[in-house]
Image (cartoon, rainbow, N blue to C red; front, side, top):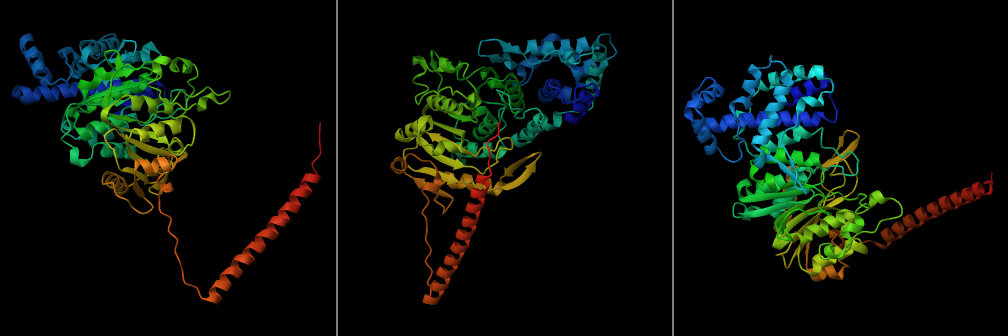
Length: 533
């Protein structure tokens, strides 16, 4: 169905257009909500399940009977009127101004369900569920035909058989739906998509098997949520009905995708907590006047970005506690290289409840930097005994960036035994378009998770160290600095020793000769360099 909708968009000049994503995601969602309504209605009313046309059977209901049916439906189901059904639009597709009827229907669904499905901005405005979809077609004379083509495709499919599927199915469906629309475009607020391997490892370490099913009524937060991959994995590990999701992201596109992800994953109850806005400048979620604190936080924040236009607004007395290690200065050059992740990381530490846990993707350079804000953040985590450990990932785990990344695990309850794990040698390198990326096998993912959760020391792979050990190593969180270097001794006869030393000597003589020749050539070239005006 997704491919068919993309084909329709291409036929009307919207292939790879910036508005194609809005059309595809909104039409997909309309179909999903329509079929979810049918699925829930048939579960409640056996007569509807037997009817030749469930739509006609509902139309035949009295107003009171229809209202009672809707009251019995779960909170994740949109409240639809008979005129909202796809079958109703299909039957009226030859009406004049069909595009207007199509748009009006979607807008009425959005208004009817605004309290449940609207995403808020940090200024309090509501971003409704649907736009006037046909208006993305620039030629008004083609809008009716476009909407007819869409409705005719929607009638051909049914989602009803998929509503009993599990999380992994919906994760794959969502990834396919957005795969062309959630790429790092290099802009100031480029959106990031976290690979499933990273998301899975983060969730499985934050919520290990031994506590799954035992955690309830907890809050889960991502201050740079993107399309919500990390939050969905975390909610699945905890149990969708056992947690409340909170997020904020500056991108309207990401917030819309996250809303769609929540709807697909039975987390509609958390949509009111999805905020579009600047987390660093205007953090939205509060308990009274104080910033809200959370049980679990996951984040893959942008690493570097020009935030010079609001940098000084962050470096204030009011933000001193939140940005305890400082706010990066504005460089004279390369403003786009400002380390914004340092601010997100401090915001996350500040936003944790006592005993809370967090997992954050950071550039690997963070774990060893010997000065500045990076060092101060590590000192804070170690000195306050709130660190679970670090997993250093393979290079190119993100296809869109060559930056090496590590996952920092914060645990306010972990007072001893910090796990440092070096997974940089794992994975298989594959081509991804023009880029190269590294894929972890399921066995490698499980090895990382099991080793970390069991606090197991494995030669050249993982170590378990104390907070004092880390402080003594200049607060380095690099596993390699704690590995024991083993020296292998080999018994040699006097003749074998003489032969080895002669081999080393001969090699050095050859290298010295080569070096001398290069030196003479360089001097010769320098003599020939002339000044020209």
